[in-house]
Amino acid sequence: MSPQTQYGHTLFLDGFQLGSSAKKLNRLHFSKDASENALFDEAWLQRLVMAHPSVLPVDQIEPAFSPLIPVCIELPVSSGSVDNLLVTPAGNLALIECKLWRNPEARRKVVAQIIDYAKDMATWTYEKLQDAINRTTPLDESDNSTRRLYELVSANGEIDEASFHDAVSRNLKRGRFLLLIVGDGIHEGVEGMAEFLQRYAGIHFTLALVELALFEVSPERYIAQPRILTRTTNIDRGIVTLDEGRIVIRPPSVETSSVSNGGRPTTITREYYFEQLEKGFPGVSDNLNAFLDDLADYDVSPEFGTDCLILRWRTDDGRNWNLGTINSHGMDGLPGFASEERRIARRA
Image (tube, rainbow, N blue to C red; front, side, top):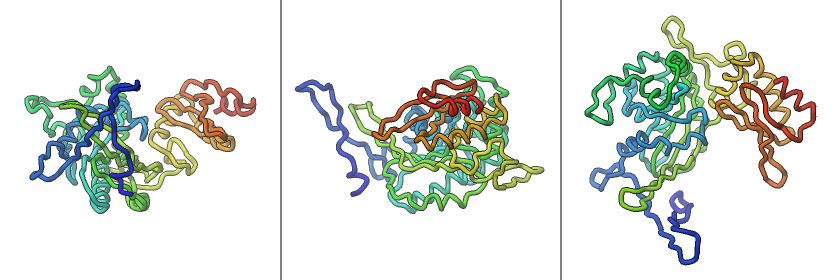
């Protein structure tokens, strides 16, 4: 069965009562062919991401990258240009490629392309990033003013400029990015992608392919439906450091990493959570990781946010229970656990 026939029609219901109507919505397809009525092309998709970054399902991919604030389009890098650059108030950077394709070869090519962009930016300083932003064309071409990254982000709420500057610089140095490939007509069949990605050492990223379906409700009114096709979960690619201006890549170790995951698969959000925890409780991460390993025997799994860890218990009948939370200033709940588990948790 092809990806186009996996799903039934998308319907718009005007109510649930008897006699209410159900309107079949027409899916609008993107096009690269100038001979067609290419209203919905890659450039249109770029503008959509800038106008409505919420169409990107980052909460399901990496919660640490929410909320995303649009910065610019066509950011120039050595190997090309990034379609969309977005940033969070915490200084996390998201690189977006808006691509339309119909075959696996093109998919692999664009994956390599966006990772190359990330490798280029991993050599940058905050000042070089700012300079590149200044060289982009504003969406509103009447605005030719210099756009400071901090001012763009702080317009959505007051943040500390020094902390923001340091966070962006740190993420650039580590090559820590969220990479999203967004498009229409993305086919499944991403087996082997992990092996392909292992060639890219030194970049600390999460990569996801997102298919965006667009439906017309009425003229100039649309429904956007994002679908995550695949994402990486192990972003431990290596450590990037600058040694007298030269970029050096080496495997991570307990000595070179502030938080040891003991070889566990990790995500940027999990890493970010432990970094915040270590600020208030230095050395606590090993204890907490050991505690989470113990909880796995009870079918309890962690769900990480940027500043909060939720403990989920899946029962034999398939239900999920929230047993408690662990955040930077303590722990809530854990009803039903023996005193020994609570003691370990408090120690963590």
